[in-house]
Structure formats: structure tokens, C-alpha cells
Image 1 (tube, rainbow, N blue to C red):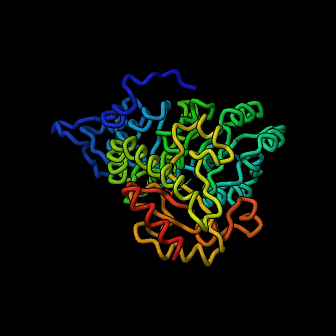
Image 2: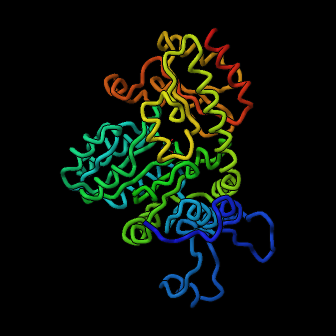
Length: 394
Ligand SMILES: *Cc1c(COP(=O)(O)O)cnc(C)c1O
């Protein structure tokens, strides 16, 4: 959708993109922990507010450190505009709230991060927006839902926690024919592995809390979109509702981008090897990993993603009791609902992240009592293999 060519290759932009040095010529990017800015004269303040000059006026609008992060991520994604937000959920909420109004219609894949499902399924309908959920893997379900006009299509691929893949190109085509903009939550794939804008999507949202930080320190989010969407909807909404990213957190994200490519590559190598190993373990009912031949949508996954990703879902025999026993026996993997961390983290979706869903909804999503989601970290993969094997036997 954009014909802007990055001047440098992605790995170089991740290190150097967006860098604006201060008068002190620092090597590393500066943290501008300031909420406001001063003017050299009353006339300059007036000109800043009338729009005659462009400059920083207030950090709810823009901040130099936040802007460096936005520019670096924008270059990586190949978008016209990037706006950082305080969390992934504020990015999703602002993307939806800024463009939708009563009478509009949203079609979404049903396998979503549970807070995204809450916004689309609970909050939007309260404001007169109709929402419909479909099986994201079923193109005929999308076709049926999009045979009526819609305003927004929202989807996540691979999905949380069962790693279903949505065909970005096919769904984007159908969405556009129905008059909808396509919003992709690209958290699981990361900007390194999947480029939704090139596959037809209009807007990409991130929780940068996950792989962009990558070490579990800060919350953050980002929205990547066209200049037109920013001008028509997003900029004023963000300015006046205030989900602003903190300069400190944005600095952590900015520095996180420098190692993102390297880290994701290692996460994926570990995940692929571990998933292949786990498939052969006795007591393992099912291993779901898009990079394995056994994944039902392996071909599609490899067509739209550079690698299989950093997450594995697996199901043990013996339901919740065995799943809990396995989690409790892990030594080099922590029990945590977070993901995209250098530390391997495992969670039991049915009783944590997806507890809010009804039993029927969980069943439809494949979230069984024995299902565990594993965010594969950067540890030595041999230690991870040994740990999963011993925990499965405990
Ligand atoms: C974590 C996550 C979010 C929400 O992000 P926060 O930074 O926690 O607000 C949204 N979507 C997906 C897929 C996520 O994993």
C-alpha cells in the first residue's frame, strides 16, 4: 500500500533508523523525560499552537524519544505512520474507537487475545457497533460474513493460544470488497517474520510489551497505518484521549528494536527444534507449531511468515491435572502468562488468559484442559528439551 522504499536494509534501520542526536552528540539515543516544552517567546508558543511551526508542545502529543522509537518501527514495517501507545491494548482500543461509530460493523476472527475479544465483543456493541466473529481459518466463513458491508476486519495470526493461521491476502481482498479496513494484531508473528501491509492489510497493531522489549520490562504498544488514516481518524483521537507512551518505556523499546531480528531468529530456531523434539515424547497428545509439517496450515504459515514463530502450544494427556503437574515441575521455564521474553514462559490458557471465555467458547477454540502455551526463550535449547522431558514424566 505504500511505495516508500527504505533507504537502508531492515537490520540497519533497526540499529540506526530514527536516531536524532541532541547537541551533546551522544552515541546512544537520549531519554527525554519531559512532559512539556518551553518557548523562546510568546509568539513562538502562539505559532506552535496555530500550526504555523512544527515543534514539540506537550508529550501527550509527541516526545523526542517516543518519536525516535516510532520512526524506527515505521521504517521496519514499511508504513507511512507509526504511533506508539502506552500498551498493546491501548493501541487496539484507539485503532477501533478512532474510526468506528454507531451503526458500523466489525467482522473478526474468533481466536483472539482475550482483551481484544472483550473490546470487539463487549465494548463496541455497547456503542451501537455490530460485531461478528468467524472461524479465522475458514475462508467460506469470512466470505459469508463479508457478503454484507463492513467497516473493519480485525484478526490475529498466528492466533493466541492455538496458533491458527489466517490467510492475510485472501481475507484482505474480501474485506476490501466489503468496504472494510483490515486491522492485524501482529504480536505473535513480530514485524520481523510477517509483513501484513505487503499482504493487503491496512493497519498493524502491536503489543511491544512482547518481542520488541523482549526482556519483560515495560508495557507498550504501536499502531502502524497510512497518513490518511492518521489524518482522518487517529492523530486527534490519540491527542485528546491520551494513551501516550512514556518516554522511558519508548527508550527501552527503541533499544529493544536493535536486537529484535537477532533475538527472533534465535527464538524461532529454539522453538522449531523444541517442537520437533516434543512431538516424539510419550504422553504428548499434540504439539502445535506453525513451522512443523504437522501443523494443519503449515504451507500457508510458511507462505506468509518467514519462520514458524516463537510460540508452541501443546496438549498433554490427562487434562488439567497433568498440565498443572507439568507446569509445577518445570525448572528452566517459568509459569507466566506473558510471552516474547528471553526467558521461556509457560501458561495454562484455560485457567488463566482464557478463563473469561465460556466452556463452549474454549472448546470451539481448541483450548482444552490439557493445553499449555509455551513462549520459547533464548536459553540453550538442550536445557529446554531436558526440562520439558523431565516435567512430562513427573
Ligand atoms: C499481549 C497482547 C496484547 C495486549 O498487549 P498489552 O501490551 O498487554 O496491552 C494484544 N494482542 C496480543 C496478541 C498480545 O499477545
